[in-house]
Picture: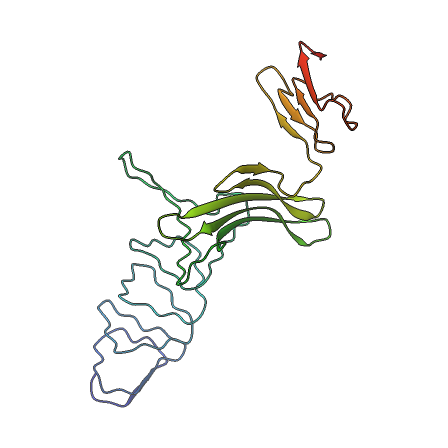
Length: 239
């Protein structure tokens, strides 16, 4: 079929060929069936498109949402300029990073890169945040990990790693690893510190309320002014 301005059909168009020169092809509620290859300068589809086989697209520009009921297989790299949300309705792994490389080098790798044009001391490099709900249906950060640039000077760079947890409604520093020291309980909360060994539940115990120290016990001596603050236990007896 060649040389017209339009085709109007109420039945199936399943034979012959259509060459250029047409304005609109309106097939009503019927189907256009082709067993060959269709070539289009542009294709505007206002309804649904159902592809049973393989679709090979060199460039895809999608302005709206994409709803996929099956697996998306991407053999190349994925680059996104916006945030990404992955939602599951069960307890499956929400994100897996898999490396099939058989050598001895590291892999898979997760890199969090703060590509700042003006890096400075005390810049926060990134956060890992663990959020849940409370019994009032509010979102709460229950724990988070923070990484800082402590010194951005070339040749003397320093970093800091901080672990925080929620304590009585407020996020508190529980572990700080900085260039000069490792600090537990930087926010001075009433939190005991306990080290357990193979046979002792309190191989080392520090009372968060008064700072007294027990070795082999959590039963503290008097913490009065001038009193001993170190208790050492041997075979269950303090001394």
